[in-house]
Image (cartoon, rainbow, N blue to C red):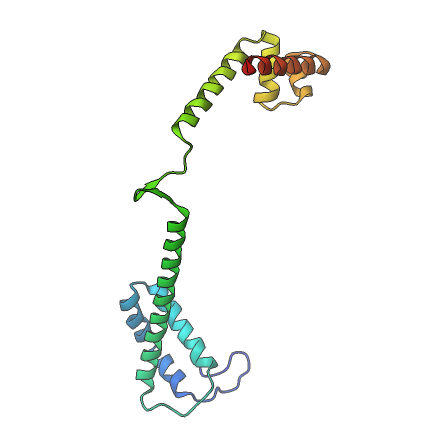
Length: 182
């Protein structure tokens, strides 16, 4: 970065902290990278430090501007670490509140085994009932209800009138309802 303001051609006021930052930026990024383990995180922190330095109210020049910059960078790093720690704790608390446990063991929110067995038996009964329908009625029911074709598309596929398909589907539904309620 130059000491000229972008696009204005004016000289920026001499700020000892910004001058030290600009001179030592590469070292500052390495300093932060050794503590974060990530070049991207170090670059982000260095950029955040620059923004804070550039937007602060000017004050008296510090006795040791380099030490002040490194201390400010370390404070930013600690603030970020605390924020990540709070976020992780909040996420862990949510996961703990959202899970189901019984006797200290995590329990899945799956349906009960007897409900699964009953549903499978009901499905088997429905499949058997559909298989027992007359062939034309069965085909009309499968195309319309299971494959999602409209009555008109089902009629075209079967070579029937729409009215015939409607009658087959209606009769199939009545037969299946009667059989499954028995």
